[in-house]
Amino acid sequence: MMSHSSRRPVSRLAIVLATGMLMAALQGCATRQNPDPLEPWNRKVFAFNETVDTYVLKPVAEGYKTVTPEPVRNAFTNFTSNIKDIWSTANLFLQGRFKDGTLGVIRVTVNTTFGLAGLIDIATPMQLDKPNEDFGQTLGVWGVKPGAYIVWPLLGPSTLRDSLSLPGDMYFSASTVGTYPRESNLLMAWQLINTRANLLDAGNLVDDVALDKYAFIRDAYLQRRQNLIYEGDPPEEDEPPEPQRQDLPEAPASPAAPASGASAPVSEAAAPVVVADAGQESAWAMFP
Image (cartoon, rainbow, N blue to C red; front, top):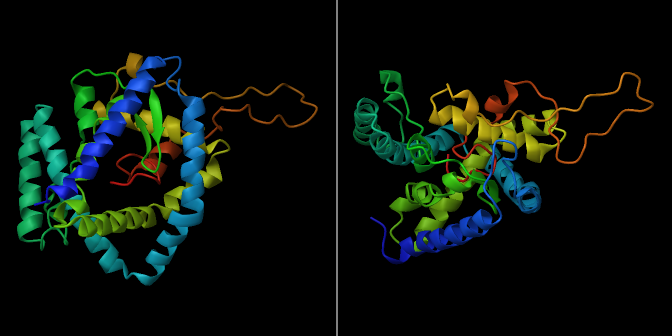
């Protein structure tokens, strides 16, 4: 169990999130035509995150991947994933999916008892599939609209609705098992670096295919969140707008540069590939 002092960061984060969402709400709710009314703010935060990732997190993750044996990395990934499965299972019950929730309970029990506290994933070979739910998806199932797209410092892409899931995502993470704040912080840092190491290839793919990386990640995030909420079959009226594409003139005098804020033309399959393994669907997702 976490000590009283180790829970304080979550409470402070909740206050920050609530304040940020209130400020965003005052600027207007997102609509089908404009899912990104906070784009000026978002692009600045995105640039900050990219800078920190380029000069700090990515080099550390590359070094960690080089010196840490793959079995150790896999074991820690399984361990943190098993903790997250508890949160996912709780959300399955909140969504009224009692059969899936029961299977989630069985999965966590099997991996915790026979998989050495989750270090070994025994449940997946037993066809107990991993749930991937959070409170943002639960709110979506309950009919809450996503609201404006927003990029949080260090935490990455989200929406006003999905931001309400961040405290739960942080609580059900490796830091939960820390007895003292220092232990919790070390485990949180380890999870962040381990997650980033697992996403190195995905991040390189985004760099290769996206002319506007910000717009690419935004559109991929919004599309995948809708697919998760509606289990791959979102209603047409709720689908996020497709990325804008520029039409080139028939005989341009010179190659036209993409307009600021427009998405680069990419294949429809590219976005899910890039973000498939991240809980918040970006290389900056702290909690997979």
